[in-house]
Length: 567
Image (cartoon, rainbow, N blue to C red; front, top):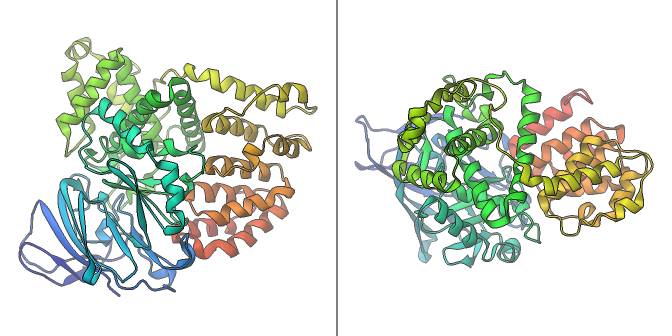
């Protein structure tokens, strides 16, 4: 069964030939020409045949995801989308599937009537007569950023260069949530890092079964519908994807072993934008949450694990996705913050970042390129020998696993963290001091302050009997939240405390979405919990499995197949 039947080259249309495959990525396929076609642009003709409503899961590609109607928000029509990062687009179209190679592209996509196609392209046009869409990306991008989605999707304008896309049942919620928001973030990003070169910045809200938080496909970011909290409390999450417009999409790591160049710089850029928009205290609180995730990861793996280096050696045949962890994000952020610390002047480092983007735009680079440019830009630092300061050597940062040698100062966040920590202490007491608890007003607390508070509650769980019930009654803002980050943590607290009266909220959350980051921790918590929690896990998975992405299904199956309490 082939849904991509031919590939158009500069010569002529050729059928595909097939070879044995890269591990887990199905067969390799390539155009049947005998001389190399080394062009700086590629063109594809794609016909998306009516998706198969009852497609066997074993036939689902890791890259091309076919969703049944049950896996969508509207439950009426099937849906398909592609996910290229890291090395999956080789099963979508013939390409040099490495971030070292960048290319422009054009595509013609024919879809069934009643469906719309969108791609990561600078221009697109629809031919009404045969429901054909034509796309063109005029800026060179690596293969992993070429993305396609087809479904019952519509759009709404939310800014001068932005629109939201979603299924009809979600579009009004998406419009209300993001109207005016994206332009504010883009404008700050441009002031800090230089022009936004991609034209439009659209967001596609994916079906609930979408297993990822977001994918920074240029011109149209794919995101989870979990970001539609209804109160704009999660809109700042897209700052990360917007920051990739400069770091990752414009300046790209040349291989996946130096993924920190994409993600470490993006985390730094995200937090610079966040500081301008929301202030230093809130940004430091969010960064503290990220640091806690890095600490948890290194505690689980051991600091000396080889993946806890910034420069990772990926052996031939190893899927780069299998090396994914918090290190390139948060340790990478610490390294970029260390470079800023060496400069000692925020405005000068911001100017360096603009120069860095301008120097390497549309290129793929290595860490040595970035660090050499840093030292050339600041010759006084090069003269001081900052690359070899004992304990902080650039080589140590790149090639030695372990905790970051330098941690940026997050003390501005103490004004938000301290009240949350103190309130968590009050709720962990065997005898609750309700007068002191009621004296703390959390009505103005924003998402990450509430997340920080709930993380502390979870760390202190199980709480004394009845405390969770009282906490739930006291804070409906938390226990009845639609914000997915709060729902995740509340579900974990409910399970850790075996608070059975609210097991229904756990089931409801798992029915409402299929994001891997939310789904797997809850199943682990259920399987590590009481007998009734394990029964809930089996019951819920039986009901929700058809709406989950195949990879998430397989991960949950592994959890439920493990010995209870050992997940």
